[in-house]
Image 1 (cartoon, rainbow, N blue to C red):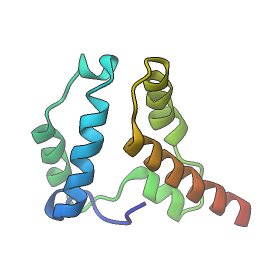
Image 2: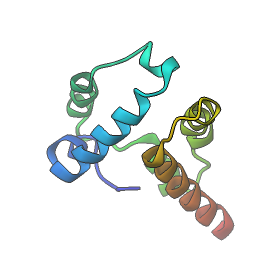
Image 3: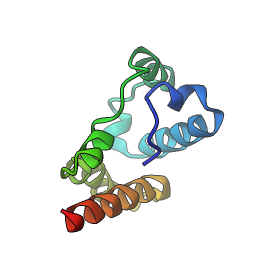
Length: 107
């Protein structure tokens, strides 16, 4: 969606705000909160893999179906079943699904 490397998610203040917002939403969902990973740990992974591009970005680039349904879709279903509002996650899901649909229709 952003077409940036993992490291830019930490180094760019605007992307970091998005990471923090998604992290906050995820931690509202009980089954995720039980296995909570600190935001510092998330940022550390981004830094350790700073030159990597996400697998979903690579899927879009190479015109493949992404794993958005099984990852974010699953989380959205859990959140909805518990009436937890997750607008950032929904936005990310819709953008990736939109891109995925666009590339599959052109193939």
